[in-house]
Amino acid sequence: MATAALPTELASRIDRLSGTPRAGLIDRWIYVFTAAFLVVIVLAGFIPDSVDKMAAVAAGKRPAFPFVLHLHAVLMGSFLALLLAQTSLAAMGSIGWHQRLGLASAIIVPALVVAGFILAPVIYQETAQALQTAPADARGKILSTLARKENILLNQIRMGVLFPLYIVIGAMARRSDSGLHKRMMILATATVLGPAIVRITWLPTTFPVSPLGTEMYILIALAPMFAWDVLRNGYVHRAYLIWLGITLPCVALTYALWNTPWWHATARGLLT
Image 1 (tube, rainbow, N blue to C red):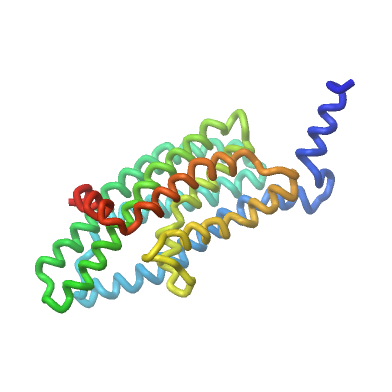
Image 2 (cartoon, rainbow, N blue to C red; image 1 turned 60 degrees about the vertical axis):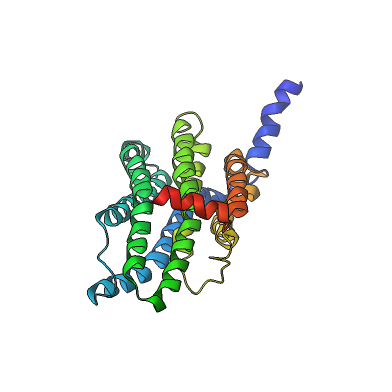
């Protein structure tokens, strides 16, 4: 009798809003909405920043962007476009196209990670070289920039490790657990939002004193998807538990090392 009752109890737990047209609509499009929201955050951070820097290049106030930065931007843009396309295809029921297009991530994600790890020392060296030729009154500002980039390396390393890890977890679940798959792809993307968030200058922030404010904005960006999941299912999906279980210790380590003399010395050795 207990065995016979289990499917009914499980179904009730998994689908509290079963049969409601509104729930089905949100189920299909909440991931599209979240993906689009993440794309908007990236655009809001990088477009004004890029316009300002390109104007500075044109005015001769800073050197031209290195090739690897352009490559990284193209790859990141491609990944975000892929994420938005994939969530939209899944929402429309075009699973065949979703699966075929998903193969592109096997090329884009590794290339994006490699470009990111190459970019960090290139950008650091650009600033370090500017320090060597800077007048005395500008050296303090450049040294401050170098220290900030040494701190940022903590986030860059974390993103470079966790982003592909979450993508792999999601990819491995694509056939056996579609719920884990689609959530992990969104959560992986949220992991790399930090650089865009710190560039949205009108947001209150703890950066560069502390990285914690940026992490809070990432949680806020994910809040609609998470809230719907809990309302819809009545429990916290294990994708969030996996993501938080891995992310939180890494964030704590970042916070502990941020702006410490040991880390500045270590980062300097890694970047030079």
